[in-house]
Length: 383
Image (cartoon, rainbow, N blue to C red; front, side, top):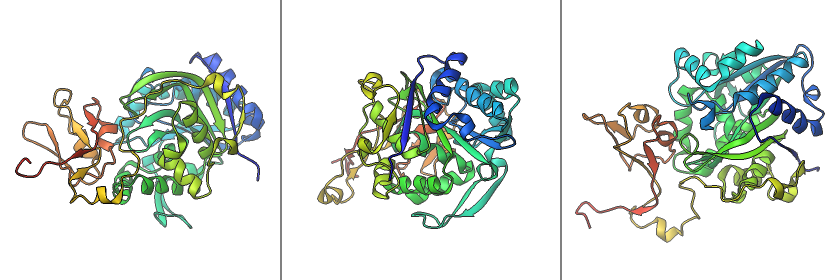
């Protein structure tokens, strides 16, 4: 069986003409956009629209990439539709605000493409052979499309270490349902990885083009630091794309739950030799000193350590009272309801109920939630 292909193209700036040319270049090994889109096709373009942040924060897929892809789809005679289901509790009004802040509203206006809010129309579909759920509640949009083009952003993530093409597909789950799936995964990143891969099997994109012009390092996926990388990547394989992207920034793919589980399931590469790379040599574009996420992903602890009467507590979310503006978002998005807002407006986290999904850290608008290191819990008497 042939190896999946991942193409790279240098793209040092978000200048619209430069991005358009880079997209054309990165798609050339696959036959260009015309290899996927024919006249009359409905094409869903799915960027990462985590939250209402401006493009320069590197939280969301840059509008220049979205515009370039929509332009090429329209040139092929396709009907482009841009949509997502961002994190947190979204309404039609908040989604419109998000589109404006992220620059997506401008893309829709300039290109004349359609936009869709995934939470508006959902359906439950069977998932034969899935490891986690036999049915998933998902947006109708990807099921109605003839072609799905995913546009992930290269970023760090507290729970999964890295977020890219496979993790992007969690956006197909409507906001109201995301919490239930997090609860099912509990504190096991491998279970959550299986859930993501089950979604990947069910709703595999036709093509993925990754925005790695400027990625995010450190406290991702929302409050890290923008990091210039200067490339676009494309592939028909989400897992191969993620494997190469992680390698590009110096992350070990074998330690990232989604990629480790993909390899174990036979759904992704187990080493770089199993990926066909087209474009500039990897060493010429590799990023040095990339800052990983503060994360619970640590080497597996010996069983005797895990059984120390529950006194060893893994990395957990903690609230910085000075940065907290008492909005209550962390409590709203906490799947197990482990966060309670006190009379003073400050949130308190019940460590015993916390499942370490880090939704609070991911979606706090002020970046007031940090991820602590593993620690030994004090007994009630302080010893």
